[in-house]
Length: 370
Image (tube, rainbow, N blue to C red):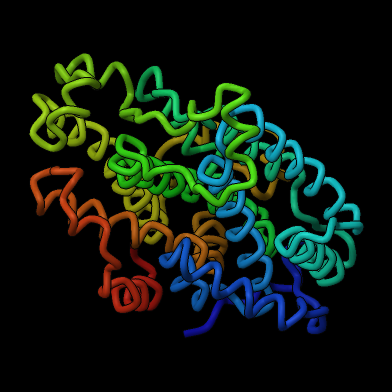
């Protein structure tokens, strides 16, 4: 298995042979942390090119740290303060002066490595990192999504954006790779929200050893600890799901399975779309539809990266980026397990590590199929 190397004409994606490495000790410590909180991404790091693997680790660890803010704080005010810390940390890290925070140090080193590998032409996007923070802050106290479009927007601004950042770290600037990544990120984000529903609906008790417990209660702490059913409100209304019924009856709440099915179907639709795009490219055709985010910040492309680009070149970009796109595999496996338990979102099987992931990821990478 080998990544396709870019031609000389692809200077924006060219890879100088030497680049600095991240601190090995910090990387080892972060790998331990990473494997505990995001085991699928930990497994998939094998398929990221070695020269971009440290950046991948930094980006994914950043996501875990930001996502855990809701669990580590006792009220929205403290959570917002922590989010602002991360905004400042990102700004300082990308400027080369990270705070003494392991993930920030790694982000800074990854960004420096990327710039050195590309003679200063590429760097990690501060706007995209801030977008992830902003999207997570918006739902810091676990409010419900107004509708399916709101859930998709959240998935785009978090999981799709993480994929854009990883593509940027290769570096790869390709409208086609970004387009496929957008659908995969949406599928992953929606599946992740479904997977976390039981924990959000029935959160564990607060950490009694937290040094924020007293401070939180004085500011109305506990808001973030109240249970919530994080299904889109329009889907719940259509299926006849009432939040109080879920709290009282759990998996047997009327309409819950139907609502979960509807949301899971949307995630699966995005995976199907991504597969159709790859199929079209391999048949020498266009991907089939336009990328809705073309022209957005970070998605400005040169003419040879636009829609008139030959399918062969588009396929070349996607193949070189394929390790990044493998996030589709754990999402697909989890959705298959959800279907097998008849969309019972509270079934304990859905919270187990999937032993098939390494094998399925290997074959997906080898065959270039998701």
